[in-house]
Length: 213
Image (cartoon, rainbow, N blue to C red; front, side, top):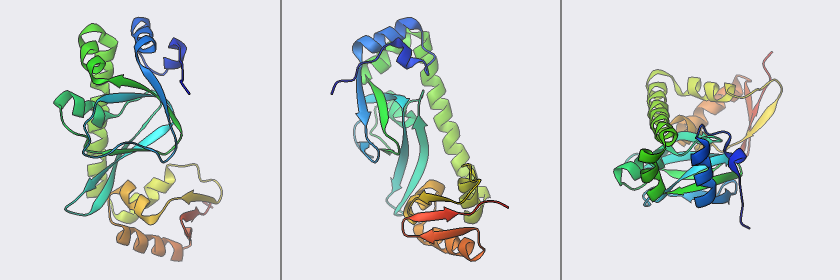
């Protein structure tokens, strides 16, 4: 089913009215279901997505270490920084993009990504902001991995939610390892220690978080 939008649907983006109308008139809108892969590592990048809703996770697989790392998340009002970088440098995608929520996205092909830089100042500003935020996210991940223990990173990941009561997270040990940048074996060992301390309970495919206090 074809999805149609208007300029109001682009309210999360700080674009000029002229650019918003251009996007409405020339770009395709698609829906991505949860767990659907939109782009795989190593594929040629021919477009960038503008997220109207939903969220995706970008992961990179390191062959030498046989590990998968979460690079960042992309949601409403954003685009994929690695796809943008790949287009600007004419390289293949360094990541795989997987939806963690159903998403609706505007697809901007390469020719528009490049042409609009010299035509619309708000587009050029958006691209610069995207590259900057993507670079900052990678640096923060690197700093976190270098300065904090695995237990500290796991607890920090859990604390990002509002856990005022017992809550379950549907996540495998491998998925958690990818989020914080370590191996599944290490994550499993640390989770067992946290369970013995009474902070969590482990279930198949779930991690039960206990309420503070």
